Every structure is written in C-alpha cells, then in structure tokens.
Length: 260
Image (cartoon, rainbow, N blue to C red; front, side, top):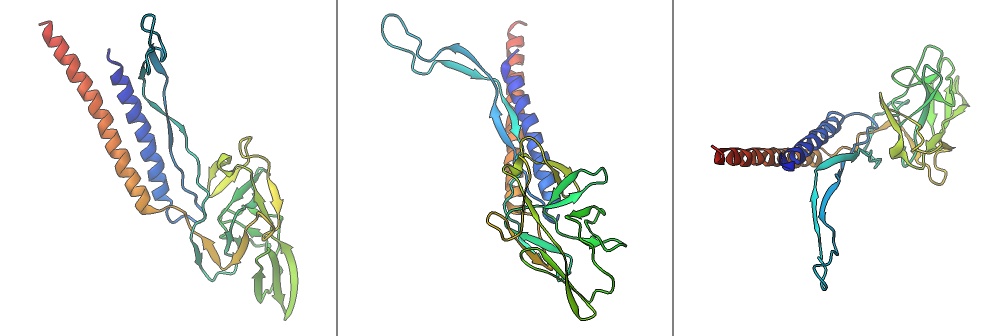
C-alpha cells in the first residue's frame, strides 16, 4: 500500500486540528484577557533507504542519501501572551494589566488560578470577585456606603467613605517563567503546571510586572484578519493533502487495471 495514503491522512488530521485552534481564536475575539493560540507542526519519522555519505565503490560518497518522510503531527499549541488592546469602560472595578502578570483567584476547591481578565465585581459581603464569584487574592473587602473607589497603578485600593479616604487592600500580580506552559481551565483562568514554573508574586509597577489601569479592560489579542488568512492557508493545505490521497488511489487503480 503506498505510504502516501497515510502521509496525506496525517496532513489532513493535522490541518483539521489547526482549523479547530483558529476557530477557537476567532470565537474568543471579544473575550477579555484572552490570549490566542498557535499550532506548531513537526514532521514524522523517515524511512532511510540510503544513508547520506554512503560510498559508491572505492571512491565518492552519496551526498544526500534517500530519506522518505511519513507525514506530519501537531507538536504543540503554544499560547501567545502578547498584549491586547486596552479599552476604557469607566467602570470602577474593571482593571486592565498593562504589561506582564496575572491576577490570582481562589477556586471553590481552594486551589489557586490565574487570569488576565480584570472584570471584577463585589459579592454581598463586599469581597472583590470574578464574574464566577471566585475571590481575588489577596482578598480585599470593600466597606459599606462607599462614595468612590480608587485603584492606583501599583495596585493600592482606596475608598472614600463619609468624605474620608481609607486604604482597604493591595492588589498583587503573579508572573511565571514560562506562561505558555500554564494549563487553560476555561472561564479566562489558567493554572500552574510543571512546565510553567512556580508563581512569582510582586507589586504592580515593580520591575518585570505590569501596571494597573482602573476603568479599563484588556481585550483579546486575536487579530481577525491574520486568523482568516491562517484559516485559508489551512483549508488549502487540507485540500492538497486530500488531493495526494486521491492521486495515490488513482495510481493504485491504474496498477489494478494492468492486471485485468
């Protein structure tokens, strides 16, 4: 059976996964703090029929050898943590990160998770929480009868109550040596893994950490035009791989016809 049948099939499978990744990027074009994903490919093993450098008689060497590839596979889907556009919302508890870092939140099971989405709110007790009700860490509780909330670039949270300003908490940011190694949980959340490295907590505006902007949100870093071009390329690659399978089938049919 011609190896090109399986080679073409591996190409079709890889491009289908590529389209799945692109579709997810496009679907999240308006998701706050979303970071696009790229598909990486690598070739499969090779059948070496003639080793490069094989001697032909007493003199001379084969300069290239004969090596036949067996297709392609997905080697990874790294997440690209480039900055997204910061959009003003004028909502006091919307916070954008300008630079590196994540907000830390606590999941219902007590584990830590991390997010770039700063669309915060407060629960009935005044705790700052995500849209899913996960507590921001370190936990910050707002008092009653607030007249104004101010969040500085370095994360200091100040409230105005009865004309008096009070500091009620400090927002911190968390960095990772390899953020692409974080595990995506959905709901704009990531979790630490062996690949990401251990979390490094710091104060916004410290060296290596981003600054905070109140009343704004970081939008997705997905460029729709680029994703549409990538989708066209993936579609054409899928069609070409299917054509190679069709061609191999026609060659097999021609060989069968000879025996008739």
